[in-house]
Image (cartoon, rainbow, N blue to C red; front, top):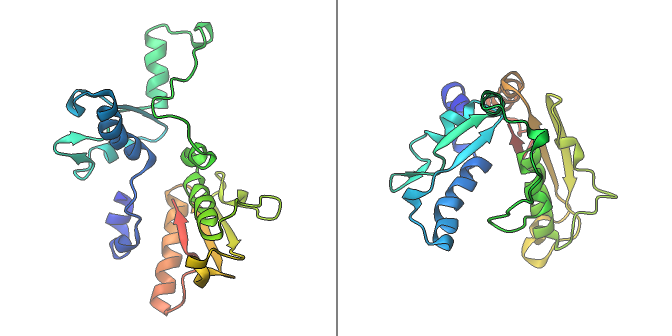
Length: 210
């Protein structure tokens, strides 16, 4: 978000208003879970473990709070977590395995892949496809895998066959998506979009995940 704000402010209106998985979970914990457990959200401390240092800045954005209560209180990078464990002489292999406590219940397959690069895109495609067609994604004939992974910029297209009545206007449409990993590749994608806009050409994708 910060990268777009500083380098491509003319595209801010096209950014999704959806929070990141980190902020979504924090908001749910401080609202739904806190209410369920009958505790004051102000007494709940959320700690997020993430691979990217940008998450530290994200949690501090002014909009990431409700009534002065932040969605996420602290962020540790995976490197910092490893250092913390090492400093305290914690041997993970020697620890007794414990079952996942699942405080918010089970999730869908789309939710499981949400955190992977391209995972948000794939989750959105899966959910949208099933909502629009009323059917599960036929993986034998519909390959969504190309939008995942860490190979720079990846593209995929999804054909919408028959639809449920309320989405008839989408019947036969092809949804084009892309996933870019890393700032250099994000800049390449944004420059392409800006070029299309300046030339009055249609954008090559309907949805892009960074």
